[in-house]
Length: 477
Image (cartoon, rainbow, N blue to C red; front, side):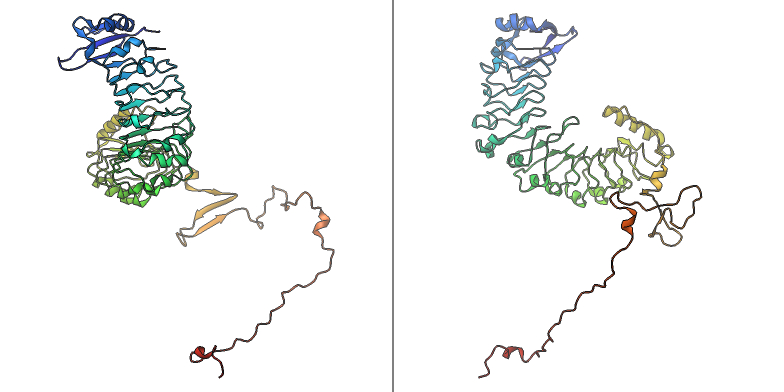
């Protein structure tokens, strides 16, 4: 069964639970057992060195190379069972014959293909993670009448292609679902009705990961038309190929965190300031060229991540007292106004402005390094980017474009190769002719006739005075 790892029993105060976690090294303060010893001796005997099995409520067996879990596990009064990152191909049988009071189950990162049979703990189950398995359909017991206690459901990165049967399930108004993660789950526009129906939804993630873009929406704005959410706090729309920012988002006043990175956005709407409770805004890895001035009026904003964009202008951030994280790495900024003492994490490298000219350079560098350490960033360079010639002069076909500052700053002139210019090194220019046309086709051989449009005779308009209009339809009698 692959029981190679060791576990350690952590005993706390009398009234608290005993927790079990994998451990590669023995801890002198705790007693170490092999997993095999746990299931063959500790659990069957129900007591070991004054440790009562009935008090064990948490069992964490992740990364233990498990292919199955012994049926003896069903004798535990567990509230949490962690089995992620193993080699399970089937749902452990102990879930069908015991563990009735389990509240949290983690089966993520395994090889499971089917979970249609409902577990005994379903009426009490609050959190379940089934992400990164090989499911071809969502569990049929999900959103059924015995599953009303479920608060968190993660079904990301599976192979389900339809969720239609859920639409006809039990009255969804009774469900307590607060956190729903369906990353790269073959979602389409037809699934919006399901996503909008949960009144207690707090967290919604329908992003695509960087490897599989299989959540495909034609009109994402429909998701924000009359949703039943009342207190949605976190919304993640990463990697959805969005080219236009969904305007309906601005009406979700309860939103505290918004993630729209890895899209094709080129602008943010002015209405974003209506998100008065927004604290975290992540718009990185887009093509955004400017940030609206209204962003500076968002008083509760604490984190702004906008790295890897084309931003050439930002509002004055010095007035935003709550802003603690500012990441504008790799943009096109010539200058920026901010208070380095007010922020905790900042990175302005990779812009046209030279950070080495900052007055508080040492303080800025310290906070820049803290940001990279916090988010585990290792592939960034320091210093400004240089303006390449193509940044200053854009080429348009064979024409050179420039602004004529001497005459009019708004005028645009094009310079190209003129027919009057002499070039002694090149052969004379000839007009390109279609392959089906020979030289004789260019010679006129017919008779020229003048063609004109004939004028159309229009009857003379009869003038009717203002006084005569009322008598037009009257008989002469």
